[in-house]
Length: 117
Image 1 (spheres, helix red, strand yellow):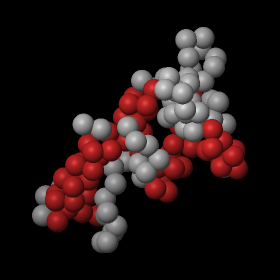
Image 2 (tube, helix red, strand yellow):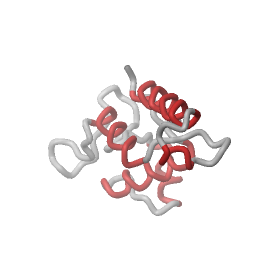
Image 3 (cartoon, helix red, strand yellow):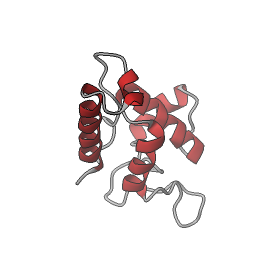
Image 4 (cartoon, helix red, strand yellow):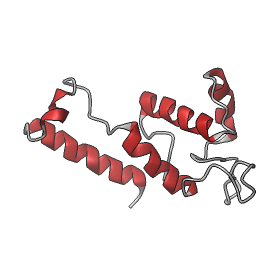
């Protein structure tokens, strides 16, 4: 089962819990806003699926590259087309910190839409 499917199932579960007032911390979510799992929960799962959680290749210096021939690289396997937007937000995608920060930025804005894993 893909990571997005797992997250969707978890979101359905959380919605059920909210509707039935079973899990009170989650019932504080604003009405009309679908619940979303914390980035601290979701992003490590995405990173593990995308790169095994690794930012760098075997040399420990070069960002990990996609083995299927795309331009994806690093811990979250961002495409090269993300580089300009990431830099505008002050994230250097060649660093693990930059990948983590940019992943949080994207997740906050659009959830898991940027990943297929």
